Amino acid sequence: MSVIEPSAGTGTGPTPAPSSMPTPTPTSPSTGDPAPADRHDAPPVAEQVSFIIEHKVRPGHQAEYEKWLHTIITEAGKYHGHLGAHVAKPPPGGDTYVISVRFAEREDALHWMNSDTRKHLMAQARPHIAGPEHLKILSGIDYWFTPATGGVSPPRWKQWLTTVSAIWPIAILLPHILKHLFQAVPALGRVPFAQLISTMITVGLLVYVIMPRYSRLIARWLSKK
Image (cartoon, rainbow, N blue to C red; front, side, top):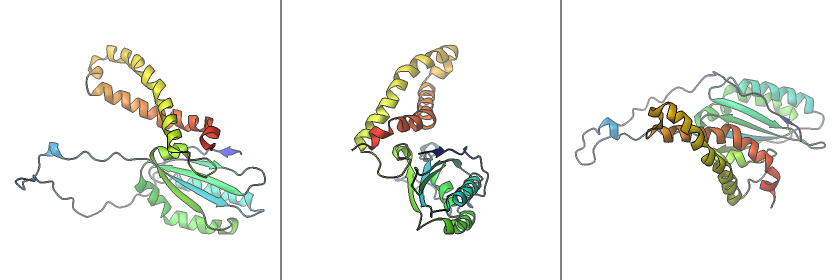
């Protein structure tokens, strides 16, 4: 199977208007007075979302479909929160393309999926696609373990073992590497800055460097029953 990996977009497409509904002021359960500012709950951390789309292309329409695919990926890249796209072409004799499109937040992804731009482009693709598109929404680590050609994700115990084996070397090596930084800048070695720096580096390595490549490397084992 050949793979096309378009570069991640840095789009600045239109974003949905913020809700006009007023936000209720937190109050003390005992007095009903406004709660102190430092007791407010922390805002939720945004989680990346991926759309996995399958298109079955009509015989003889592959060239026209791939031109259309390039156009829609380019347009998606103009929208806010777009992080990139991955296209898995069918093997020889096959007819199904699998496209994954990543966004920084669920709201960004839904904004693109429901946009007039995508609806117009999908109308242009109808002559080239046999049947409806199949679409799945994934978030968090589920995307790491989704086969590039679609299908069922591996069992949870394999996902757990893979994630542990990826984090373990980082947990061993990173403290030794950061020790030199903390010695050079002692303020960064204090709680909670040291833990924050370590966590940010670990998660960044997993999400952007290790897991996308590691999951492809062991894809055969992950998919083996």
